[in-house]
Amino acid sequence: MFSRQVLRAARVAAPQRAVTLRAAPVRSFAAATAADSQPPIAVFGLDGTYASALYTAAAKSSSLDPTAKALSALNAIVEKDAKLAEILSAPTLTPQDKSAIVAELAKQAGAGGETVKNFLATLAENNRLNLLKGVCEKFGAIMSAARGEVELKVTSAQPLDNKTLSRLETAVSKSQYVGQGKKLKVTNEVNSDIIGGLVVEVGDRTIDLSVSSRIAKMNKLLTDTL
Image (cartoon, rainbow, N blue to C red; front, side, top):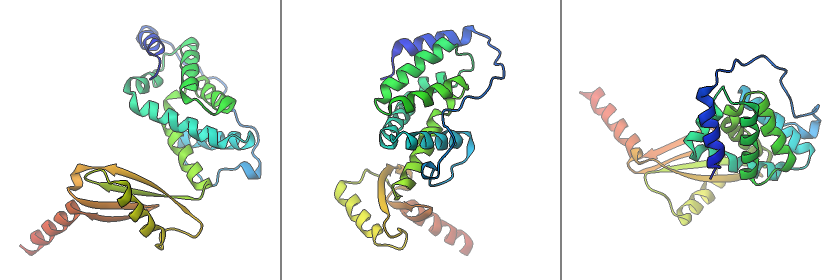
């Protein structure tokens, strides 16, 4: 849980201050890139720029795995705490607020060392803490590519048990959708709107076997016929 004292201090301070943000030099925490530290895929947007720079910095310091673990933890924290997300977007945080938030985030991350601390400090200094969640997600995409992973997302109306997920993983791993030497990264999302069946997403391909999809097709067929 994110420190209540830090959240309370930032939340109280934000509406009381009318700070005009002045243009300042943008700090970068990554040095010139080397060929072996370049991200394996391109990710776009400002959050993608930060994610790419973080990958380079982590690769150079041989801390990719702990950095990935830290960003996964930070993503979960921001996703779970709506108030924290609001505070990270506040334009009126003082340097003291930012310092306290960065220290707490680094503590909650629990891994990554100086690379993650420098990354968080850079976001704070550049008034980009609101990009944290996007950076975490895009860094995760870069790491998946670096590990040769292909994402297999299975959406179901009810949570699937491990045996069913394992059978799906085995079946999909033998298909043409997964390249040789690639590893599947399996996730199960629950969406009651699909009613039943499955929606399987492998990389950029989608196989819709849901009941809701069948009903929609049937309705369209009836409408077109009548």
